[in-house]
Amino acid sequence: MPLVSGADVEAAALLLAGIVRRTPLEHSRALADRVGGPVWLKCENLQRAGSFKIRGAYTRIARLTDAERARGVVAASAGNHAQGVALAARELGAAATVFMPESAPLPKVAATRGYGAEARLGGATLTEAMVSAVEFAAATGKVFIHPFDHPDVIAGQGTVGLEVLEQCPEVATVVVCTGGGGLVSGMAAAIKARRPDVRVVAVQAAAAAAFPASLAAGHPVQLAAMTTMADGIAVAAPGDLTLAHVAGLVDDVVTVTEGDLSRALLFCLERAKLVVEPAGVAAVAAVLADPGAFAPPVVAVVSGGNIDPVLMMKVVQHGMTAAGRYLSLRVTVPDRPGSLAGLLRELAGLRANVLSVEHERTTPALDLGEVLVGVHVETQGPDHARDVLAALSAAGYPVSVD
Image (tube, rainbow, N blue to C red; front, side):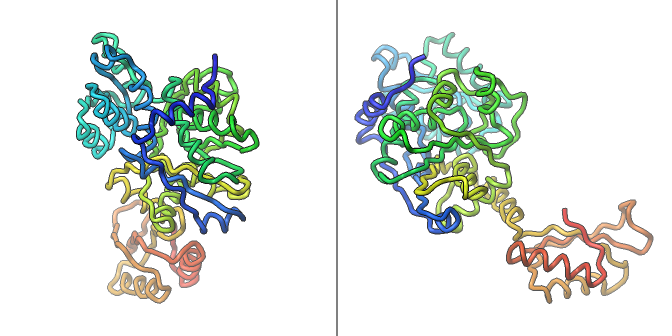
């Protein structure tokens, strides 16, 4: 099948002029220090509707006939494509109906409706929502706007790549968050057309990585299950078109763990001052996890910032735990007055900040006259965490880490 060309992406850029923002490229000294050369963040989290998705959605809907737009459009999405389609449809005067899984973050559902689309919740996964959307489109005559597997969508997303080349002409490596593959396909098409020497790397969540098996098989292979906080890239299988692009144009596909994602999200908040969702931070997570694997100058695409505040609190806590700044301890102490106070004094002397304390007396593992104390503490980093554990053990406390 024919791939999207550089000229296709340039045509999409002309169509999108004045519609999408030319998002900033921000230098990250903290990442540059790790990589050993310049690292830039392409901030699509600052795009209209909070992600790159408006680029592909607008390109696709703008190229429909007047009659097709009059019938309305249908989409399926966990959130970002939903918002992109809703905003693009509003800009172009088309009615939009979006099917979203029941687990879709509430802020994304509210934003989709706020742009004027009808949001319908149903199904446990994006795959189930997509089936409902396709069936609804067939029954009503509305046009289904695929989230990634269409040439116009790929060309629109690829305009991010054109901006990267213009903003960082010396770039050597581009790292891209990847779910169904629309963004990395378009960016690779744009970049390789102008600069075939630039290395393009796709990054998937390890718990939702459909591309490795699909590339090995030579056709889309559907994952049996996905469990990742990165809902925006939790796609069970690539499309035929995106798989062909990744196979032909993308230099490597790597995966990141849930711990990598949470650490990267915390890094973006603390060091880059960027609000990013877990899916949007996958490229940063890959650079943080293995900085030596990316030849500088590096551009990492921060693809979206639509994060549920409740999830953000959980991910920040997870990220601090993964970074060794939270410890969840279980300590056995004698069941007598002063035992808990003694443990807390020990922690205070070690400069560990106690966040919460729980008592448990009924577990079968305890002997008569013992209490299991659960203590959550904040440390100053991995070295301090190890010092705390070593000092508690040296003081005679039987301690384990949850």
